Image (cartoon, rainbow, N blue to C red; front, side, top):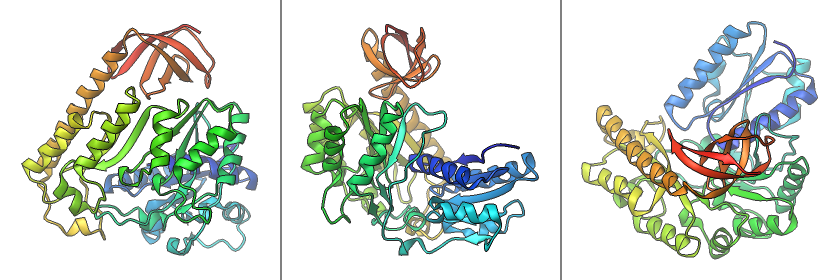
Length: 420
């Protein structure tokens, strides 16, 4: 291989952003003939996929420098460094510093494993990126880490404690991306709605969003990656219901729709709070659509408890679902709880997905005959403000926002004709 380092990134949107930070650092260091595997640890399956990608990278590029980083590498550096295919393992903090890549390039004072204790990290900085390769929208990291300890989740041990990028840094990054022509910015974080709790100015996410909209007037579309209904304050509620440049699509970190399971997960919201939040937003901004993360087959989940989660899709009016079959992570409290049979977990995940597809198709059908503003992601493909994928006839430059007439739906996406 030649040219820039190749990056294979798994998991969340934060990893997508950090992949671009690493791309810039590797380029500045002159690090070529390298493959960087940016791992995820949210499930055992995601870690398996990361290991599979490492082996493939070595097979495809036998002479390349293979660097492994990300949450799985942060949590289990020895496990990855023991793989014959791996040259270097660097932690989640180290991967964001240019020095790490410069040291690998020069082979000077470069330990094979460079992973510090993530819990000692107290600040996070805004990182300027030149752009997002192959992306029509750009991600801006505003928050890192998590102070909560959900019983199924290992991510706080990969990301550390919650810490926020000061508003000034977020503004600088957003202006730079808008100046480069990006029409949509997505604010990302591990626990996005915890933004600002650690900052001296005590500005929370709603204040950040309002400041961005006021001070970057040329930004047409602002999207939030994921929010926790237990952390939404009055200012954030106001901006997501009254600001038209904040997209009317909200992804909620729900995980379950049964109060006992939520309690055993150590979530901080109840079933009713989730439903009431969705209803309150729709009462002011009825066009809003909601997505959610849901886990199928959490330990001790009975048929009745699962039915509560299944009914939540209709009761809360959820449209876009991310369904995860429960996968026990070692060293988490949930791994010690009475497990559900794997066949039952798969069946429950299937039922959730099918209900989600029905809700999605109903929403897509309601869009037929409307005109939508579409962000062109690639030739012939775009996304509406409410995040529906559209297959388009007609042409418009990638990265621009165009008007489309929606003519129908097929295979989980809209069909449309560009008007401008």
